[in-house]
Length: 162
Length: 398
Image (tube, rainbow over all chains, first blue to last red):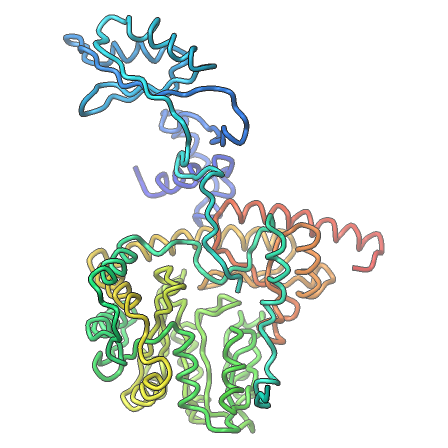
């Protein structure tokens, strides 16, 4: 991928509201070219979605999130893809990664309560064909997400204004 | 206390008073910061930490760690094409600030004219005065892109017993840079008055269009120039107090004398940090510095675009991280604008008159802050300017 697209993605990652006009200005590039590049990346799926990173603690969000380590026995010819597909169908599953190391799939789910999450694991996830074992870890506190810190870690480093 | 006359005449920094107010407003957006918003890269911090753990806590040689002097000489040669002997022509100082003090102290005789571009950084004038020198303004207008022109220099140098010319480029607060031809053009006037140049190049790495040109790289300059630079802006090491002087042997011996009696040596951990900064930079061509510059470049284009769109005329600065905007289209001067902007929209910028008379209709906007903060500030400034325009149309006194 060329430098322009890399830079555009970098800036959009910084703030997805920027828009082609401001991005073009910042990169010293032609606006039409930038707009075309963005559209192209949206169409090809490089840019999947524009969203927002929120501080859920500050927003008093009442949900519970958990990271579940899942060990599976991969299917002949289909590998992990088929199992992954079954798992990511669930709305509760926000994130799904195939991992190297001690377990195979990292699943991050969001539920209404501890009970809700436990029920998902015991009734929907663990019982799946090919799932060998699960280990559920509850997320207690988020310090940093997507490269940005939450209110919990806003350290003032600059003492002087001069 | 029986204080001397000169110190009583010197005014405290104009910026300080303003920011004492800002510090009482926790949710103010400060665009007044004069330092990078990046933290010193980890590998540099690590080198300092290791040096402390190993117990390198004693004085270094007055000149600075020999290895550091070597690296500085190599850096100046590689990056800016100026060659200095690390053993006799380089001095490690406590920031470029100490370097400015040393240079002026060894050059100025009581009554000597010290030519200082206006607008420029606040320290030159008070130090010149403390040395018994006579500060003389070289007027740098927006029309001339805030650069020194031969005409402005001639006007300032004539009949002022001018001895020293301070050349701070890239410039704080205007962001102006001097190109090679522009520097050459000044030589005839400089030679006519036999001026000694103090070249403050602390923002050298933050030069956006083309490479920074040090006056010392031009024939006719080197033998009359004291080059000042440092680590603060290039490596985000403002708090470490690490800078250096590069100058011909006789000048270096002179500043060394003062440094020996006053500072003794720059902080030892800082020197080890600086050593790591330059050594590591050699391996990847100072990529971290270039990445930082690229980030600043985007912010520069963004904020200058926004300021001009608001009707605050602002040239695109060639270096540093400041935008110097003319606010007279709002009917207010820099002071008035800055105070009202702070009161109404909680955005802090520095009034231009803090940097000299030429800046009285300007504000200095620092873009050494996150894009997010810049965007929010631009929005608030937009609102403010629009509101002021409405008030003026309604005939109100601003």
